Image (cartoon, rainbow, N blue to C red; front, top):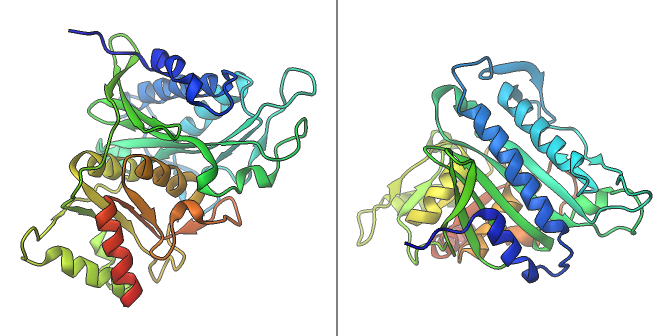
Length: 333
């Protein structure tokens, strides 16, 4: 039996695929790997130590922060700052981005990272899978100057890498640099990620739809019609409804089994609830690299020009045929 490649070996072997092959992006991905292991260790202690439950703080979106939100944010922020590999960091849990000065005199590092430190964290109290989502862009403002707003407000099609870490029955790191999607599973005994899911692809057809149907009365008419279509007894339908409430978990299941994730606009969230930069762009990049698609119902997610760090958008992501169907229902409603 041929030994599986470690994540570190895979990164080094594929470094030449990067447009700017200086080793910097490889070191950045390794920093994310180390932070993921630290967060995984803490997640696995939930219920044994005082790390579950809410804090007395709210984030930029006025949402109650969980203790693990704050912990995960701190871990990823420190891992990226201390290793001197990024010039800017932005998080769903912070009001504004952080500029990071290089330790090498006036030189500036070349990448900015945006993170949703612990997606689905409200589920942690009930031992449901949660995750981390990350997105990496190359700095576009003048060299040897601090990171600026424009470096973060880039279209998703400018990402150089994105991925997620799933803290579940096993811990997985799934990422892309624009050359396919690969998944690595953590061996907890050795503390090493091994390539377990090479060249991940959505199945050609899907039969799972993931949406919080409790908000049905607040959905756009096109989404209501699509859900009725999913539930019709007609040939390959009805589809199966599966919804966890953690984007990483729902996306991961749909990637493997074949399905689509929906988070439409509602009366309470007319612009949608998910964040374009921290959630939708990185997952859309992964989806397209895995043969899927992602839209806001009218436009490809990766073509949206963001206007603010915490911008929200409706989000439909998964099997390409299913996303096309959703767009069609929304267009004619």
